[in-house]
Image 1 (cartoon, helix red, strand yellow):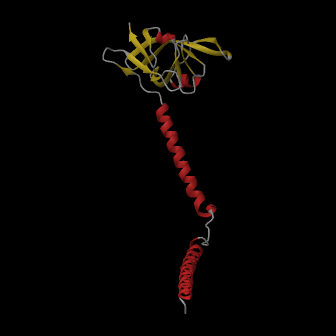
Image 2: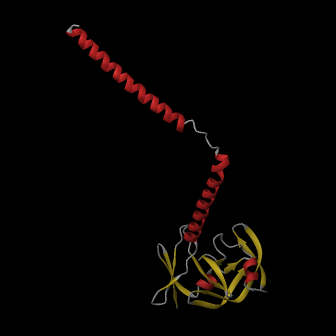
Image 3: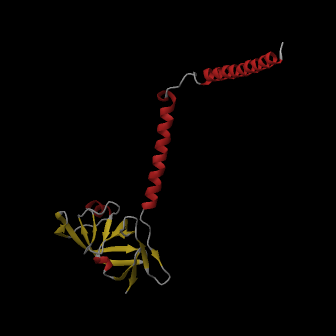
Length: 201
């Protein structure tokens, strides 16, 4: 056997060995693929759909609770000098909690409204009865209602016992009542960028 023949024979052996290893690797991969890829696919409608629905319901419920807490009107802050501070909400309005005739209420402050106003449903719960029938002029047209005098309204330590309250108007979606000038006019009001400050006279 010549030198050239031996070199050719050695090269051929190397090629065969290389091909054998490639074939072994392919065979192993093929077994792995059949074992894992050809496994029976479980229908999501049988086992996956219900847990997925429960998961998303839990996520949506958590988001709802967080948003409700985040957007919930906060109690106004009372400073050491007695001033009442109401912070501006995310929607640009001023909201706070307080009481109308002793009933807990969520207020939206409306400096353009002449009266504190509540819905008829809220008035019934707060026992705001009687009053004088009237017609309210609103942006959506005339609305029947009544005006009741001598109603107590309070926000924190700020209390006014003889407030005129309009009954029959629907309050803002985020509030039970509008806090108008029949209460606000009893105080000095300072408006800042993100705060409204009420000061006793």
